Amino acid sequence: MTSVGIRSLSLCRSSDLDFSEALCAKLRPVKVSILNCKCKKMGICGGETRSNLLEPINAMDASKTTSDINGGCNAIDDLLTTDCDGFPGKNTPKMSTVGNSTNILWHKCSVEKSDRQELLKQKGCVIWITGLSGSGKSTLACALSRGLHARGKLTYILDGDNVRHGLNSDLSFKAEDRAENIRRIGEVAKLFADAGVICIASLISPYGKDRDACRALLPEGDFVEVFMDVPLQVCEARDSKGLYKLARAGKIKGFTGVDDPYEPPLNSEIVLQQREERCDSPTHLAEVVISYLEKKGYLEA
Image 1 (cartoon, rainbow, N blue to C red):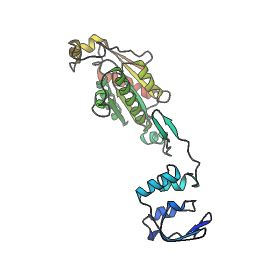
Image 2: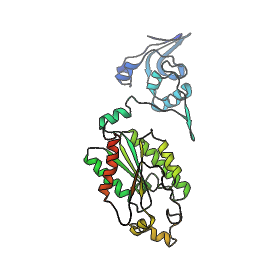
Image 3: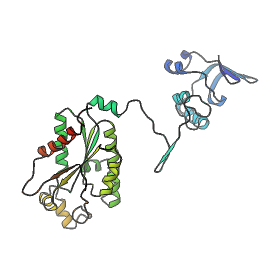
């Protein structure tokens, strides 16, 4: 017999319920509303409630009942661990508002970034490669990923064009959409870094304020900006995608370097210069970045 205030409930054995044994084992005296349980063979006598068999609340009923009574505790585990309108346990958490998202709560897990880094034997960070179209960003990203993979390090590339095939396919190349494109990729890169992965973001990202906003998402030192310092005439001479030709013909509007500005970084961690008379191989450029990561301790836990 479990007492609940002035009421008492006769709890059945786990074999009589649809709940698992593990869940039944977690049950302990809790303060509940009589409306929160559907009971069979229930008799009410004065201020006492007795039941020989409690019928488990199905998923839909639980969602309704607990939401109405407990202000948003939707899981059985929440009922047992969270203080929601009388349920014992932790204090009711303070909800947050971020942007247009209201009543949200950050759930912290006992497995943290340091644990994942120890598992991977590396430190999560973001390598942000920026430069004009045709400057070699994607080529460097692949060479860098290949070089780190050969050293047993886990990487993932967020290529500007690749991400626009899915996550950012709803965005155009207007200034406001470009800003949103960078913001989303910055947030995804942050998640990869938190997972302990060396994330390589490769995209034009023409505006300084957008790159700075992505930098601000990460802890100090975890955002490594790599500037592909390649003159416009060299990039246009390469024109591997034929985009400069289309832009010059007026068939593409707002093309970076032609009729839309590119704001060169002023304080990049790494600057890779290439000129017409000297163009280093992607492998050599990748080694420059890898040497930086080694020096800063990112290739060990």
